[in-house]
Amino acid sequence: MGWSLTAVNRKNNRPVLICKVLVLLCLFLLFYFLIGREFRKAQMRTLNYFMPGSYTALLDDAGPVNRHVFDRYIIYYKLISGLTGGNADAYAMLGICYSRLEQDRPAIKFLEKAMALKPQSFWAGYDLGALYLKNNDHTKSSQILTQAISIPPQTAF
Image (cartoon, rainbow, N blue to C red):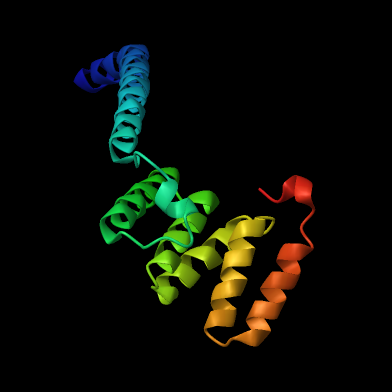
């Protein structure tokens, strides 16, 4: 007789258990989205803190390279690529930064990543082709530069 009462109580507790699980699930989702939104805001504040004050050094190809300025660019673009799970434009900018610092190996690595994610990026292709040419890899340079010049201007960025 005790067994049948336990079985009846278990059946009667099933709706209560389902309600508890649903309430816990709703609370979890609520906290997940609230915390997620705050986390994304914190990420943006972090990015804004590391954002370079000026992009003049990146645009000035003829001027001297200030290692400290480019280190800030590199930190910023690595943060962007890390937070976005791989951003072709951030990889391209990292490649350009390393190229300006005469560090060809990481420059090529990041520009190749950029081209893999966004093959229609003219400037990443142009810079990658120029680096291959600088490193006497004429075959790859020719392939990448041919690909770059075949990109329609409307989709080049």
